[in-house]
Structures are given as structure tokens and as C-alpha cells.
Image (cartoon, rainbow, N blue to C red; front, side, top):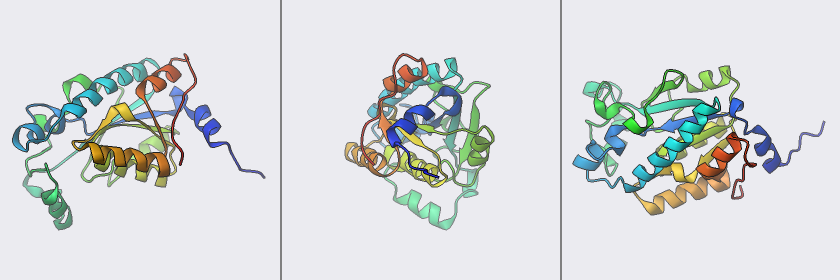
Length: 226
């Protein structure tokens, strides 16, 4: 049996709202809000993150209108380092803008920014490491609904998005990343993340293309070569 496929055609065919899930990754107050720990205490620039939130808000709205499953994934820390292994604690300490008090479960800093507040039909997943698939039931929930591809929005491009994207393709999901819905504090790292995704993981597009596709207004146009 000939199992060869036209990659671009297969992706276009698969991007129906019923088959897709939008993963909203780490758009949390401590990481993205002007009064959050990353900006206020650690001095991280959140300008690009705020722009990505605005674009994701529009994408969220269209997703809800067209029955795309939305999954919120929250970076999470338990009080008193109960979720921290020695190795994890070490890499968090060397991260430029991380602090032990960031994204503590039960705090406002752990919650999604108000602009993207989850609704009752959404799935909420806590993660304790970089990837959205690490140590939780995300894969089980997606497979239970026979979902693929995964649309990734969130921050930071070079860490949480790329880690989740790698794990997604390793779990045999198609991956699509609207570049205007992800962000990093560092433009060079952001650009490198997009190149990595474009050449090795999935497809890079923009939110307006996805919105048009989900509304049936135009075929999805995706850029880049693997």
C-alpha cells in the first residue's frame, strides 16, 4: 500500500475545527502581566508578550465560535519546592528571569491573564516542567477526543513553546504555530525558535490564516519548509 502523502495537502485537509485543539501555554499573570513577577521583580520585557496575547484573544474567540477545543496549560510551582527536583531547581536558578515565587499554585500569578480567561468548556492542565506534555494527562485527553493537529500559542517561544512542540511531534501530533501568537523576551531566541519549528517540527503560520480557515473564508496558507 502506498502511504506517501503530499505534506501540504494533508495539513490543509486536517485543519478542520473539529479535529484541532488550541493550546494556550503559560499566558499567566506572573509571566505576562505588568504587575507579575517576571516584569515587576525580575525586569523582563513583556511588550511582545502583550501583543501575542491580543492576537491570541482573537484566535480564541474564533476557536470558540467554531468548536475548536481550547486547552490551557499552566506552568506550575508548588509551595516549599515540593514540585522541584534538584535538577529542575538548578536550571530554574540559571534562567534569566525566573524566581522561586513565580507561578505558585493558588496565587493570582499562577492564573491566566484576564484577557484570555478560560471558560467552562476548556480543559485546564498544570505542568511542572518546560513541556506541556511532561508528567500530566494532556496526551490522554487529546487522544480521547481524537484530536490532531495542535495549534500552539503562548510564551516563551524558545522554551515552553518549542519544548511542547517537540513533544507533540514525538507523540505523533501535527503541529501548527501562529507566529503572532507566541513571544519571547529575546528577539533572537524567538527567531531561532521559529526557525527550529519551521524546519524540524511543524508549520508556522499567522493567526489571521487560521481564523479564515476556521470560518471557511479561505484555505489555510502555511509557510516554511521542514
